[in-house]
Length: 268
Length: 216
Image 1 (cartoon, rainbow over the protein chains, first blue to last red):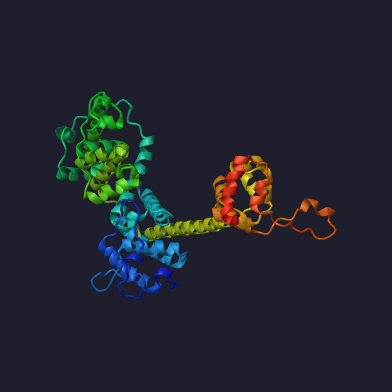
Image 2 (cartoon, each protein chain N blue to C red):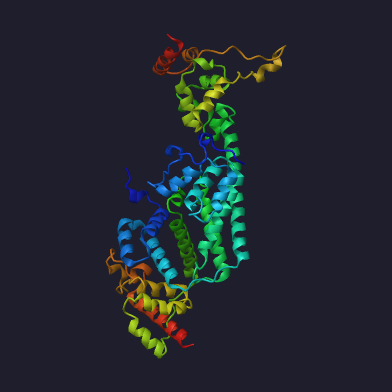
């Protein structure tokens, strides 16, 4: 441990190092934030033990610490230099921060699936950071949005897989008349306010994924239902009918199913 | 040159979208679909899932042990990737330096000896001499190595290094020899061209190149 790359051996801790020493990012104009660049230059000549110590430092005011973007830089440097030990230690540090970020995420999945999804995100992060090309550069620009993207995308793929086995096309028997149903009927054709959506939050979890998606797209994002011939809808204005490639009538049927299920949940 | 929008991968577009918007909205989605119509379906799905994740109640946290397990499993994936990368590096390093003969390498990319000679603007006799390193490497124009490199899809340095190796002994005739077989003296490339079966205009082209090397 402790060996530096040849281009960095002249720098001393705390010394200002020429910015050209920090390898620039090449992916689609990715550029590190000045703060990250500073952190890297300040830590570039540290011995490995000091570098690890700095990554563990959580109190940013008391002493210098390393952002995840800077950790990613040093992971890539370690990997490039074939320094397994430092690469591993830095990965552990990064992953420990990632699992903290994951707390409360992957909503709507059971515990086992949540673990699997966390796992799959960390695998994707590993592949990006150790890639021989520059695909992981964005992680050195904005790590948390990068991780959030990975998290949402993992959910998207998991829901997509669930969608492929879930059919909503069976004839729907029709809803039961109830107080909860009447309340939802009043809300059916408009975008719900954040407060109204917050009230529905717990119930939404009980909806089958596809129904939930239609409900959210309609009421949280305000998608129009669309016409009975989805191809007739304006391509510049995405509608639910066009997106799901079904008639507007079918979308209304799905929304009715969702309303009924939500109403019945409320009455339990 | 391709526009930035065309070069952006789906992952790039998602990253930028999340970085630029605190929360998912239909207005932002429509704007981004306008910029990246090729990803319309994926963008809609992504934004829908994001909105859904914002709406649903927070998931119950994993236990500390489960979180540790997630990190440990991810670390074992890190080990696998690092290991396979180092193996690949070793493998590709070995592959890059391994080079049997021009004719064998030609076979690897689907050329017979005659086809390889033709592809490099040589005749079979010239190819055989080069293959057996019977040509003085100092007399070979750089364009010869470049042609082989292009046809054989190998680095030009590797071809040049091949020419520098010791001449191959003519083992097929060694049973007639009284002593240990020795390589014959190396011929100049220009001489080999002159004695080849190439068309006069092809010979002239080569000799123009060798003239610079031979100082003629």
